[in-house]
Amino acid sequence: MPGLFVTLDGPGGAGKSTLARLLADHLADTGYPVTATREPSDGPLGQVARHQTAAYAGPALACLVAADRYHHLAGEIQPALQADRLVLCDRYVPSSYVLQTRDGVPLEYVRRLNALALRPDLAVLVTADSGILEERLALRGAHSRFEHAGSSHVEARLYDELADVLTEDGFPPYRLDTGDVPPQGAVQAVSERINELWSRRQRE
Ligand SMILES: Nc1ncnc2c1ncn2[C@@H]1O[C@H](COP(=O)(O)OP(=O)(O)O)[C@@H](O)[C@H]1O
Ligand SMILES: Cc1cn([C@H]2C[C@H](O)[C@@H](COP(=O)(O)OP(=O)(O)O)O2)c(=O)[nH]c1=O
Image 1: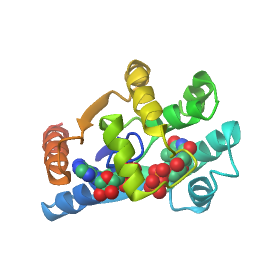
Image 2: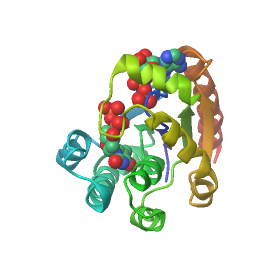
Image 3: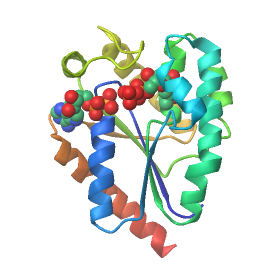
């Protein structure tokens, strides 16, 4: 697959959406053909998955998110990569490994459900100390039933516990701790990695 596929995952409050927005702007300003997107997608299935986490749970939410993901891949991500674009996706399969297992779905089922999803060229794990995450979430406010007091600790720990499985399945986490790195520092760190991968890809 041409282009470059970069995903951002991590616990709520880690700074994924902030980084995704600033990184997309920075890369576009430096001349990259950027397609910025997110999961759940902005399509009809994604809208339900994003806004109705109170109504959908367990295997139903796992399947809904996976169906949205395959549709998003076929309709937006893969065409952009075919056009040699840099695709930046806020949340992808690693979020399902963590959120769906937290929601009671067996890990093996989540792995099977996502087995056909394209593997990214770079899977960034945006994270921070759980105390910092809790403070940020308290300030920003919760976006879903997955975000509540104490949730950051569980989520951050699960990303760490699943690091080996994620690596084995094609999502080796490139860890970025935003605890003591301001947003512009995070942009700098990820764009350096992207520059390396993009130059290598252009030489292939
Ligand atoms: N690198 C950072 N350093 C300090 N605060 C940050 C950083 N990145 C994001 N924030 C703040 O943390 C809060 C959560 O960020 P957000 O991007 O919404 O996280 P996520 O998308 O991972 O849930 C926001 O108030 C944001 O301004
Ligand atoms: C990507 C993804 C999202 N979701 C659900 C739970 C999330 O809380 C919800 C919305 O994503 P989220 O990133 O928390 O939304 P926001 O950008 O508003 O912070 O979608 C899953 O259950 N599994 C997934 O793999």
